[in-house]
Image (cartoon, rainbow, N blue to C red; front, side, top):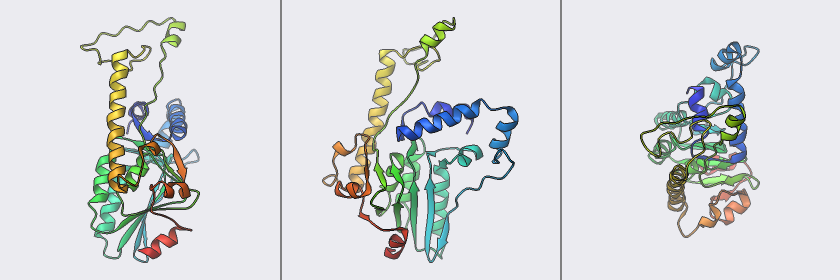
Length: 274
């Protein structure tokens, strides 16, 4: 994915914990200011010393395929984004397919430590998990938040440590209104559009009420879809929308709230079930 597109996506409606979003937004802004040499080095998947960036890969052990999902989720990511810790939805789908076709593997565990990520790509990845003919379960002793929790809800079971971070169910959008800064620097942006929503978010111009209303509507629609998916997966009578207001819970509390299936001492316990 091109850097400009990533920065744009980070200001679109997201399913991610705000703290993680802030960290990655800063990372990509810093990356945009690098020299051409450093930019090229990182975009080709090496660090400052020229050492190749190694990414976690799925592996099958004793008939169980372990698929790591560690980091923010996105679609169309490149080497730098993956090297920075992001996970591409397409890669998860490909690993699910490889697992399903592997005669050695009888079940899979998605090993999560993710704060969530982009909306684009989530639905297709969920559908691929749901369509898998073999058992797929989720485990985390870290984070299963926002879009990551959406993926976990597509699996056959969600198992966590007692202190894992679970939930952050919802959608939000963060953008910066920079008209005052433009004014202080002597700029007066002028925008000519074909409609009241065209040009929303143009640099240096505030959002109009109509544009904010449209953005809020988009966030609300995505959130409603997310809530419905959680209710369908966990049972509408077992979960409450009061627990889907963006907060997250420790694993033992998430269990009480119906968001997970059980607390385990480690991933070995999940593998033993399978």
